[in-house]
Amino acid sequence: MIGKHDRQETDEQMELGVRAIQGARVRYQRLADQLSPPAAGSMLDLERAHTAREPVDTLVMTHRARSTENLDRVFEIMIDNDNEQLLAYPFSLYSLIRTAVEAAATSMWLIKSSKKSDRVLRALQLAYRNAQEALRFAELIKGRGGAAPVRNGTEKTIERLNQLKDTVGPLRQLDLGPPPSYTAILTAVSPKSRGRTRSGYEVSSPLVVWKASSAFLHGSEQVMRALSDVRQMNEFTDGVASFEITPSIQMLAVSIRTCVELIAQLDERYEFLATHDYAGRLVSNGARE
Image (cartoon, rainbow, N blue to C red; front, top):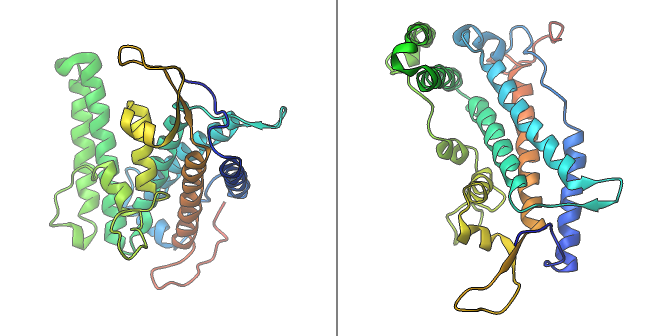
């Protein structure tokens, strides 16, 4: 039996979780609706030429939009202003949270590095994967023979991406391929635990939030039990009993806040790259829309 959140957590835990979600919502509402185009002469503006097939700033904006749309739905589902209550569900919210943190992490990974060559390569890798996924989808629907026109287009796209790669000296000797796995991307933007005796990741890290959300999405029972409130509903009969699983408001609060903070960090990083040149000087923003 699965139901909405009841009072399985203590009153204090509930209050802390609700406050954290409300605080995350306020923080989220203060963020810009969308990012502005790079200023002329800024790092991201100049890197457009090296990523012209799918410009790096466009990729950042696209994945950020994917993240924010899912967060919009999270707050829309959870916060019932008319009845002044907070609603939580054990599975659907984590599906939205997983996409939100994955997309925000992808955007952050794209521009996190201080090296131009890294940022360009990562943008080209994403463009490479996009082209390959379009081909695989066409082959799935039309069969390998029917997808020949798409395959020809994909080959031309990859050829163009390699030409762009070669416009950056340090990348000329590298082979262009898809980006690393999502696990690697989430790891790259997740700080390690600060505890002296621990070497893992904080529960609030994007990697852990993504892994926990994936467990709910895939129905991993043991992880779901560990991260939810579980109450036995009746006595065991022939080794079987019914249980009610309700989501932990605290875990949801941590996950939502992680998504919001990651987007805020992304926006700060993007703003710097979109308004400064390679010498770290602020460029004129008169060309920005």
